[in-house]
Amino acid sequence: MIAQSLRFPAPDRSRRPRADDLVAVLSCTVALGLAACGGGGGAVTADRIIRNGQIVTVDEDFRIAEALAYRFTPAGSEILAVGSDADVMAFQGPETEVTDLEGRVVIPGLVDSHLHFSLLGIEAEFEADLRRAMSVFDVVQGVAGLLEKRTPTAGSWLVGRGWDEYKYERPFTRWDLDAVTPDNPVQLNRVYRGLAVNTAVFELMGIRDNDPSTWPAWWLEDPEGFTLDDKIFREKRTITVNGRPREVEIPTGMFLGNAVRMVTVRPPAPAFEDQVQAVRYGTEEMTRLGVTGIVDPSGGGGVMRAYQEAYRRGWLKARMLQVFEGMWNTQTPTQIAAHFDAIPFNDLGDRWLRWRGTKWQIDGGAGTRSSWVTEPFLDWEKIEGQPNYGYHWAENDFRLAQLRQVVDRGWDVHIHSTGDLGMKQTVDLYAILMDSIKAVNPNANLRWSVIHAYLPMEPETNMLAKMAEYGIIAAVNPSFIWHQGRSFSQNLGAERMARLQPFRSYLRAGVKMAVGSDYGTSPYSPWIGLYAMLTRKDLWGTVHNAEETIGIEDALRAMTINNAYYTHAEEWNGSLEPGKVADMVVLDLQDIYELERDPERIWEVENTILLTLVDGRPSYQREGFRF
Image 1 (tube, rainbow, N blue to C red):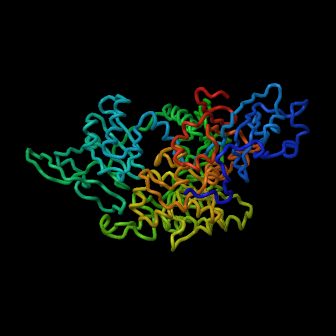
Image 2 (image 1 turned 60 degrees about the vertical axis):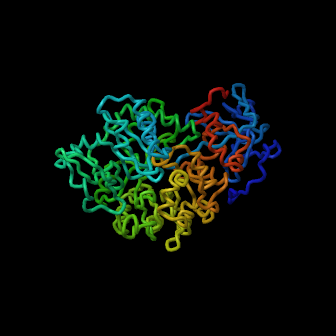
Image 3 (image 1 turned 180 degrees about the horizontal axis):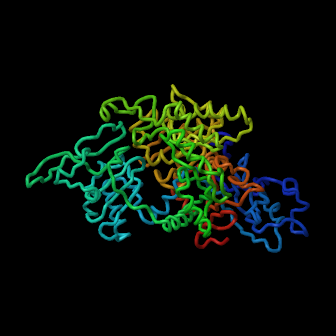
């Protein structure tokens, strides 16, 4: 059974709310300081009113209203009133446009707190999406489909993304790919820290299977310096050398971890114009799914030029609320200081495009057995031959010295930390830095996050209380449970998997959660994350600890107002309240609690999205829906 909201238990929502159930969110006369609310002379009137609906405000009390009015100002849209039809219609003027929602649901625009956005449009147009591939056949068909779509000339690259070897009956090989792409080099990127190539790529590197003189030193055995999460997949094959057959284990084309560095040729980078076009397509696609705001967690100056150009052309259909500068791992404090001294600004931009924050990395991930953990990964005896505790990039003193270079220059920090020891290092160092900052500036507005935040409550490293005490945000990616549940559980074991991303425990402890998809590791649809928060079910149907599910109210908060807080935008975004922008989504649902009563409906919810407004104007409108 799906857990109810922790703070606001849901009443019976089996019927549509009646008019007398609906409470006005704010009195226009008192809150807006207006002499009058109606259309009389000198009064403020709305440019647009939507009425006869279920306006899910996501305000402090999670109230549901009937109607909403907003206007346009030189600074953008502004919600004037939210309440009953009668109260809101008082804002109607002679030129106000009115839409009857006929009982439909309206929610605030969703915000994705972790989406590597620059990849999205490029992948959709030029690459194969392999995230839903569940067999070797599916992978090969995905590549074959891309070949048919792109019809490339011989020698042109084909690229795909999102494979996970744990999903297949066996890891696919370059020989599987060669069967459909003999004339084109292929690079397929794993969901995280891995890639696979076909034989044509090795040939571009000058390597020939039947010519041992071309084999690099790593061809038959791993080089020195490999860690436990670095792997070159090999398979015994019969090859012909000097006219004689020979059996030898040679690379299959699949590489994990730092082994990807063995592949020394790569596809060309997309042209600048393709990057700009990708921004246009990507924001159109996200608003189709109800997303009105995005955080790009590791874009920085490298992608800002394309974002700025798309913005200049009017192609930015969703808000880029934060673009982090990063990513930072092993650079010395001196190198980091020099980099940020060369950037003469911080927190640059407006409500549509803002460059703010820095991205760091502590450790790896559970799917690649590289999270920094207290207890070793499962089956290490068979897989690694020695206890595998993952890895970490830097010891405490060095990482602290690194971080001081950015926080002393006023930059926010957000650190990729998945294992419990990785999270502990991050939280402990945050506490040291926050204490030092607040000793000088008690009102410092520090909204730093632990990105991914898998294991905050392990027996020896529980840090829930400390995260709550310091206001450290858990920037979680619930879709990992659905998308990578099998690899995570096989590597961590059932007990740790039950504690992974503990949504309910985070909320009970008072830790604020910000929710993102982590595309391109996971699919970009925000609704997968909602499904995972309500069910904790993976795509094989296994539920990983139903006690850590949360209800629709808390889940929507984590996808809207919490993400607005994360991006320093909660004063003007994230909920449907007077004074905020008109970012919202119209859903053709019985009521919002329909998704909690039957979470399987979430898989159809994309088909219920009728309209997405960004700054009060349609960024997506379903054909046939009148607004």
